[in-house]
Length: 244
Image (cartoon, rainbow, N blue to C red; front, side):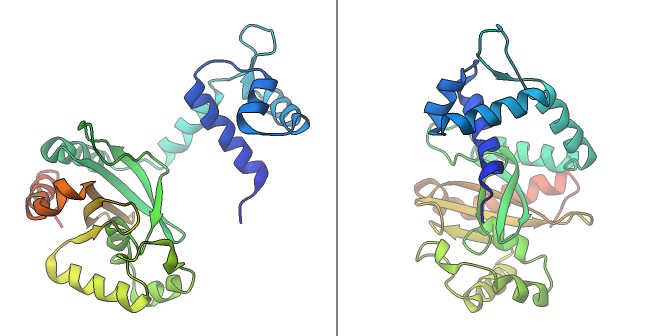
Protein backbone atom coordinates (compact mmCIF):
# COMPACT_ATOMS: atom_id res chain seq x y z
CA UNK A 1 0.00 0.00 0.00
CA UNK A 2 1.31 3.44 -0.94
CA UNK A 3 0.69 6.42 1.35
CA UNK A 4 -0.26 9.26 -0.98
CA UNK A 5 1.04 12.11 1.19
CA UNK A 6 4.46 10.49 1.50
CA UNK A 7 4.54 9.75 -2.23
CA UNK A 8 3.73 13.40 -2.97
CA UNK A 9 6.76 14.60 -1.00
CA UNK A 10 9.01 12.24 -2.93
CA UNK A 11 7.48 13.26 -6.26
CA UNK A 12 8.13 16.90 -5.37
CA UNK A 13 11.81 16.19 -4.64
CA UNK A 14 12.16 14.27 -7.89
CA UNK A 15 10.48 17.15 -9.72
CA UNK A 16 13.04 19.63 -8.40
CA UNK A 17 15.95 17.26 -9.04
CA UNK A 18 15.03 17.34 -12.73
CA UNK A 19 13.92 20.99 -12.96
CA UNK A 20 16.90 22.46 -11.06
CA UNK A 21 15.29 25.86 -10.67
CA UNK A 22 12.48 27.44 -8.62
CA UNK A 23 8.85 26.74 -9.51
CA UNK A 24 5.60 28.46 -8.61
CA UNK A 25 2.72 26.60 -7.03
CA UNK A 26 0.90 26.70 -10.36
CA UNK A 27 3.88 25.17 -12.18
CA UNK A 28 4.21 22.45 -9.52
CA UNK A 29 0.50 21.64 -9.62
CA UNK A 30 0.46 21.40 -13.40
CA UNK A 31 3.66 19.35 -13.64
CA UNK A 32 2.61 16.84 -10.98
CA UNK A 33 -1.12 16.90 -11.78
CA UNK A 34 -2.00 17.84 -8.21
CA UNK A 35 -5.13 19.76 -7.17
CA UNK A 36 -4.30 23.39 -6.40
CA UNK A 37 -5.54 23.05 -2.83
CA UNK A 38 -3.30 20.04 -2.18
CA UNK A 39 -0.34 21.84 -3.72
CA UNK A 40 -0.95 24.91 -1.57
CA UNK A 41 -1.10 22.77 1.59
CA UNK A 42 1.98 20.74 0.70
CA UNK A 43 4.16 23.71 -0.26
CA UNK A 44 2.98 25.73 2.73
CA UNK A 45 3.79 22.92 5.16
CA UNK A 46 7.27 22.30 3.74
CA UNK A 47 8.04 26.02 3.66
CA UNK A 48 7.00 26.45 7.30
CA UNK A 49 9.19 23.51 8.29
CA UNK A 50 12.20 25.03 6.52
CA UNK A 51 12.40 22.62 3.60
CA UNK A 52 11.37 25.09 0.86
CA UNK A 53 12.07 28.79 0.37
CA UNK A 54 11.45 31.55 -2.16
CA UNK A 55 14.82 32.57 -3.65
CA UNK A 56 13.43 35.70 -5.29
CA UNK A 57 10.51 36.31 -2.96
CA UNK A 58 8.07 36.15 -5.89
CA UNK A 59 6.29 32.88 -5.36
CA UNK A 60 8.86 30.56 -6.89
CA UNK A 61 9.86 27.82 -4.44
CA UNK A 62 13.00 25.73 -4.23
CA UNK A 63 14.33 23.15 -1.69
CA UNK A 64 16.61 24.44 1.05
CA UNK A 65 19.92 22.79 2.05
CA UNK A 66 18.07 21.25 5.00
CA UNK A 67 17.31 18.20 2.85
CA UNK A 68 21.04 17.71 2.26
CA UNK A 69 22.04 18.14 5.90
CA UNK A 70 19.46 15.60 7.05
CA UNK A 71 20.42 13.12 4.33
CA UNK A 72 24.10 13.45 5.23
CA UNK A 73 23.37 12.88 8.92
CA UNK A 74 21.39 9.75 8.12
CA UNK A 75 24.07 8.40 5.74
CA UNK A 76 26.89 9.11 8.20
CA UNK A 77 25.12 7.10 10.90
CA UNK A 78 25.00 3.96 8.72
CA UNK A 79 27.55 4.31 5.93
CA UNK A 80 28.47 1.66 3.43
CA UNK A 81 31.92 0.29 4.23
CA UNK A 82 34.45 2.38 2.33
CA UNK A 83 36.19 -0.66 0.87
CA UNK A 84 32.88 -1.86 -0.60
CA UNK A 85 32.32 1.45 -2.37
CA UNK A 86 35.92 1.55 -3.59
CA UNK A 87 35.70 -2.03 -4.84
CA UNK A 88 32.48 -1.32 -6.74
CA UNK A 89 34.06 1.67 -8.47
CA UNK A 90 37.11 -0.37 -9.37
CA UNK A 91 34.99 -3.21 -10.75
CA UNK A 92 33.09 -0.69 -12.87
CA UNK A 93 36.38 0.63 -14.24
CA UNK A 94 37.76 -2.84 -14.98
CA UNK A 95 34.58 -4.24 -16.58
CA UNK A 96 33.21 -0.97 -18.01
CA UNK A 97 29.75 -2.11 -16.91
CA UNK A 98 27.42 -0.64 -14.32
CA UNK A 99 28.21 -2.01 -10.86
CA UNK A 100 25.79 -1.77 -7.94
CA UNK A 101 25.70 -2.57 -4.23
CA UNK A 102 22.31 -3.72 -2.98
CA UNK A 103 20.57 -4.73 0.22
CA UNK A 104 17.23 -6.24 1.15
CA UNK A 105 14.08 -4.11 1.33
CA UNK A 106 10.99 -6.23 1.86
CA UNK A 107 10.69 -8.50 -1.16
CA UNK A 108 12.99 -6.31 -3.25
CA UNK A 109 16.68 -5.67 -3.62
CA UNK A 110 17.33 -1.94 -3.28
CA UNK A 111 20.39 -0.28 -4.76
CA UNK A 112 22.43 1.56 -2.14
CA UNK A 113 25.34 2.55 -4.36
CA UNK A 114 25.69 2.70 -8.14
CA UNK A 115 28.89 3.08 -10.16
CA UNK A 116 27.42 3.63 -13.61
CA UNK A 117 29.11 2.48 -16.78
CA UNK A 118 30.41 5.19 -19.08
CA UNK A 119 29.32 3.33 -22.20
CA UNK A 120 26.53 4.95 -24.26
CA UNK A 121 24.36 1.83 -24.01
CA UNK A 122 24.39 0.69 -20.40
CA UNK A 123 22.32 -0.38 -17.43
CA UNK A 124 20.96 2.76 -15.83
CA UNK A 125 20.24 2.60 -12.12
CA UNK A 126 20.40 5.00 -9.22
CA UNK A 127 20.41 4.68 -5.42
CA UNK A 128 16.91 3.70 -4.38
CA UNK A 129 16.19 1.67 -7.52
CA UNK A 130 14.47 -1.60 -6.67
CA UNK A 131 14.20 -4.99 -8.37
CA UNK A 132 12.27 -8.08 -7.22
CA UNK A 133 14.53 -10.16 -5.04
CA UNK A 134 13.58 -13.41 -6.77
CA UNK A 135 13.83 -12.05 -10.33
CA UNK A 136 17.37 -10.68 -10.27
CA UNK A 137 20.85 -12.02 -9.72
CA UNK A 138 21.56 -9.30 -7.17
CA UNK A 139 18.41 -10.25 -5.27
CA UNK A 140 19.12 -13.96 -5.22
CA UNK A 141 22.63 -13.22 -3.96
CA UNK A 142 20.93 -11.58 -0.97
CA UNK A 143 18.61 -14.56 -0.55
CA UNK A 144 21.67 -16.81 -0.37
CA UNK A 145 22.72 -15.01 2.82
CA UNK A 146 19.47 -15.90 4.58
CA UNK A 147 18.61 -19.01 6.55
CA UNK A 148 16.29 -21.33 4.64
CA UNK A 149 13.52 -20.85 7.22
CA UNK A 150 13.72 -17.07 6.75
CA UNK A 151 13.58 -17.48 2.98
CA UNK A 152 10.49 -19.66 3.26
CA UNK A 153 8.80 -16.90 5.28
CA UNK A 154 9.78 -14.33 2.65
CA UNK A 155 8.50 -16.49 -0.20
CA UNK A 156 4.97 -16.24 1.19
CA UNK A 157 5.08 -12.48 0.64
CA UNK A 158 6.52 -12.55 -2.88
CA UNK A 159 4.70 -11.80 -6.08
CA UNK A 160 6.30 -14.25 -8.47
CA UNK A 161 4.41 -12.64 -11.36
CA UNK A 162 6.46 -9.45 -10.97
CA UNK A 163 9.23 -10.89 -13.09
CA UNK A 164 9.32 -11.98 -16.73
CA UNK A 165 8.83 -15.60 -17.90
CA UNK A 166 12.63 -15.91 -17.66
CA UNK A 167 12.48 -15.42 -13.87
CA UNK A 168 11.79 -18.16 -11.32
CA UNK A 169 8.04 -18.71 -11.08
CA UNK A 170 7.85 -20.55 -7.75
CA UNK A 171 9.78 -20.82 -4.51
CA UNK A 172 11.05 -24.19 -5.70
CA UNK A 173 12.45 -22.51 -8.80
CA UNK A 174 14.23 -19.93 -6.62
CA UNK A 175 15.72 -22.61 -4.40
CA UNK A 176 16.94 -24.44 -7.49
CA UNK A 177 18.58 -21.26 -8.77
CA UNK A 178 20.27 -20.75 -5.41
CA UNK A 179 21.64 -24.29 -5.50
CA UNK A 180 22.91 -23.81 -9.05
CA UNK A 181 24.57 -20.53 -8.06
CA UNK A 182 26.23 -22.19 -5.07
CA UNK A 183 27.74 -24.82 -7.36
CA UNK A 184 28.65 -22.24 -10.03
CA UNK A 185 30.13 -19.73 -7.58
CA UNK A 186 28.02 -16.75 -8.64
CA UNK A 187 24.46 -15.70 -9.43
CA UNK A 188 23.32 -14.81 -12.93
CA UNK A 189 20.23 -13.42 -14.63
CA UNK A 190 19.05 -12.80 -18.18
CA UNK A 191 16.13 -10.43 -18.87
CA UNK A 192 14.30 -11.59 -15.74
CA UNK A 193 12.97 -8.15 -14.80
CA UNK A 194 14.56 -5.58 -17.11
CA UNK A 195 14.39 -6.62 -20.80
CA UNK A 196 17.72 -7.29 -22.52
CA UNK A 197 19.65 -6.94 -19.26
CA UNK A 198 22.09 -9.55 -18.00
CA UNK A 199 23.63 -9.56 -14.55
CA UNK A 200 26.32 -11.37 -12.60
CA UNK A 201 26.18 -11.05 -8.84
CA UNK A 202 27.85 -12.23 -5.64
CA UNK A 203 27.00 -11.91 -1.97
CA UNK A 204 29.44 -9.80 0.03
CA UNK A 205 30.93 -11.18 3.27
CA UNK A 206 30.22 -8.16 5.48
CA UNK A 207 29.39 -9.47 8.96
CA UNK A 208 27.24 -6.53 10.04
CA UNK A 209 25.37 -6.05 6.76
CA UNK A 210 23.53 -8.13 4.17
CA UNK A 211 24.91 -6.82 0.89
CA UNK A 212 25.38 -8.06 -2.65
CA UNK A 213 27.23 -6.73 -5.67
CA UNK A 214 26.08 -6.97 -9.27
CA UNK A 215 27.67 -6.14 -12.61
CA UNK A 216 24.97 -5.63 -15.22
CA UNK A 217 24.68 -4.55 -18.81
CA UNK A 218 23.06 -5.35 -22.16
CA UNK A 219 22.64 -9.07 -22.81
CA UNK A 220 24.37 -8.70 -26.18
CA UNK A 221 27.51 -7.54 -24.39
CA UNK A 222 27.42 -9.43 -21.10
CA UNK A 223 26.08 -12.93 -21.67
CA UNK A 224 29.23 -14.05 -23.44
CA UNK A 225 31.46 -12.29 -20.90
CA UNK A 226 30.14 -13.92 -17.75
CA UNK A 227 33.33 -15.82 -16.96
CA UNK A 228 35.40 -12.70 -17.58
CA UNK A 229 33.12 -10.56 -15.42
CA UNK A 230 33.21 -13.06 -12.56
CA UNK A 231 36.99 -13.24 -12.77
CA UNK A 232 37.23 -9.43 -12.60
CA UNK A 233 34.82 -9.26 -9.66
CA UNK A 234 36.76 -11.92 -7.77
CA UNK A 235 40.15 -10.32 -8.38
CA UNK A 236 39.04 -6.87 -7.27
CA UNK A 237 37.19 -8.12 -4.19
CA UNK A 238 40.30 -10.02 -3.17
CA UNK A 239 42.37 -6.85 -3.57
CA UNK A 240 40.04 -5.04 -1.17
CA UNK A 241 39.90 -7.85 1.37
CA UNK A 242 36.38 -8.83 0.37
CA UNK A 243 37.08 -12.26 -1.11
CA UNK A 244 34.00 -14.40 -1.54
